[in-house]
Structures are given as structure tokens and as C-alpha cells.
Length: 487
Figure 1 (cartoon, rainbow, N blue to C red):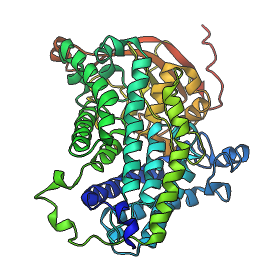
Figure 2: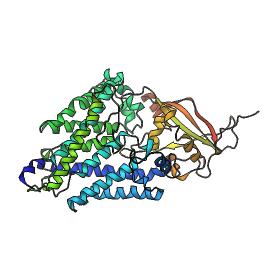
Figure 3: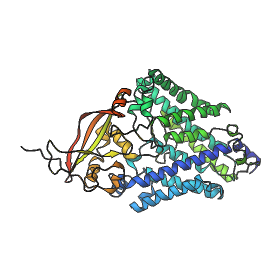
């Protein structure tokens, strides 16, 4: 590489680049495995929202995906497992053993495969962290490997992505719910968040003054600290460290798939070599490898494209009608992010029940389906699932907020339960009808709240619930509501 390009390689971020690459690969592996294990019931050929039907309605230019060319459940599974294997290989360092062009091609293939999944995933893949992963994945294409020094422009673009994640989330809170402005949102959030974790009950019962400190700290961490990412070291490293600590607090208090972990990975990429002194000197080469001109030029072209596309998220950030988690292009590059602009004051949960009784009477025995992550049984402590993503559990939380979230797939879910569909039951934590399917299924709506300390000591229950009403009346396998009982 000629000397005029040397300033574009940063030896001080050798370890940061390695952490960034390996971290993105870990998240990719988790995402592909989660897709492989859940897609058949959700978007498979016979799923609730089948991919073949979707691609017939949605042209390639609006949702580019290899599944426009061909779809079968076997092919989709092959794509998922191929992605998982390639990502796992990058995690263990395979990218350091191949030429630069080969590792770039591998990262690009991973991005194409996951973009193809997200663009046909419909509402099941409508989460902000999908776009974050895709944006990170495309950045990784230009990070290189041990054959070149860390490309400074791409490392700075990773900070720009981290800034948009954090600052966007901070702005949407400040502009949204008044409880963020009076510092009371954390009175409710740990209890009403989509999927509480095993420590959420304890976080909820922290003293209220500490909840106000949490909210104020969130504003500082998301509205002030991100600007430090663009300052010289050690200020940028301190800002990244603060972000990492606050994200670990969120990891401990809830389940947000890989949102927090990929944010941590991006923040780690902003740490320079001094942050790893004494631990990683053997990982850093004495002579910085020179980058080929073609590699540097591609990185500059990519950086220029990101700068131009940044007009849209910057405009969104400056708008009083700021939108959360929006992609401005079908390849999910340079997006806007944000979360919890509104915090619920109470928690609603949908509980699905079935019965093997052929006729419904006042004595009918109903049994509950248990989910892996979302609350149903009041004595079951919430589990830790993040960074794994339980897509059905998350959508059930949205469905409890409004029926419109469930209407496209509600009937399909119920009918699959009425025939004990194996793929659907794999998404659940417990099937109360292991021997034969139920005759009827219904959905009830409950109010849930965390128990108090006194209630927990008395009942050993983590939740208290009260029935709100019937969300979906009993439905039979024929798809018809249960007939009224005659006396």
C-alpha cells in the first residue's frame, strides 16, 4: 500500500476490530439458529404467514430476497444453517486463515442470506435489532482481517451506527411519554416490558428514588454520552465504557433479544488499544500490515454511500414526529432506531387455553398453554432468553396491547393448536394436550402485575393476575365458534 493511504489504517484499534468482528459473527450465529428453529410455524410453506404467499404479493425491488427465486422449507432451513455455520467459523477465527477477498465474500454472503430472511419475515421480523444486525453485517464486509490494518473510516462508521442507536432511543423517550420527563417511567417499565427476565421482579421493587436515578441516568447515557464517541481518546473510550455498563444493566433487567449485546459489541469497537493493555499485546502485530489500494478504495466508496444515506436518519432525528426503528431502503442500510417512546402503566397478557371436552358446559375443564418466555403461570420465575429471540412470545405481547397485531395470524395459530401441530408446539413451553389435540381453544385477556414482597412470601408467586375478559371465544377444529349451550 502506498504511503498516501496509510492514514486510513488504525493500529490502535486492532483488538477493537477483532472484538467487533467476532461479536457480530456471534450475533449472526444466534440469529440464524433462531430462524432455523422457528420459521416453519411462523413463515414456512404451511406457516401462519407463508413466505410463498408473501413473495407473490411483494415484488423483489421492495423486498430483495433469494426466496423470490425459489422457496421450500428445506431450502429455507439450508439457508439458516449455512449462515449459522459460516458465522460460527468467523467466531473461531476462520477469517484470519483466508485471503482478504475471501473473508469479505463470506461476510457479504452472510448479509445476503440474513437480508433474504428478514425481507420475507413480515411482522415476525419487524424488530429494530434485525436492521441493526444487517447494518453491522454490511460494515463487517469492509473491516478486513489480519492481513490489513483496521480501516479507520469503517471503525468510525460503527461509531456513527452506535450513536444513532443510542441518541435515537434517547430522543424518542424525551419526546414521547411524559414519564420520561418526570423520571417516573421506571416505576412501571420493569413490570410492563415485553419479556421480563429473572431479575426484573427485583428491579421493579427497587426504591422509587433509585428508579428516578435510573431514568435520569438513561437520559445522560443516551443523550449526552454518545457525543463523546467522536471525541479523541481517552474520551471516546470512556463514552463507550459508559454505554457498555448501561447496556449490561439492561441485559440484567430484561430480555431484548440481541439489541443490548450488539450495542455492547459496537461500543467495544470504540475502545482503543490502551483499554486492553497488558492483556492483548500478543494479538497485535509489531508491523502493521499494509492495505491493498482496492480494499481501501472500496471502503471509501462504502463510507461515502453511508454519508449520503445518513440524510434520512438525521432528518428523522431532527423531526418532531420522529419515528422509531424505520428503514429507509429495502437493504436496511443507515436506519433510524429507538425504543420505548411510550411505557405502559399496566401489563396485559393473553392466555391460551384448550379443553378436550366435546361439549362446553359450566364444568368444562380448561388447561393453559405455557410459553417459553412470556408470563403465564404466576409461580414461574421469568427465564433469561436474550440474546436468543422468541418471536411468537414477543408478538403475543403486542397482541395483548391491540388485536390488530394478532389478526393476520390469530386464526392460523388457533387452528394449528387444534390439530397439535408439531412445529407450532415447539414454539411453546408446555403443551397440555400431549396425547390428542383439544376440541376447543380459547384466548383470555388478563391483567398481570408483579406481586409485592408480602405476597411473594405468602404465596411464593411472582405474578398476580386478574381476568379482564374473553379475547377470543372458544373455537373448534372446524374453525367455527362453539355453539351456545342449550338447557
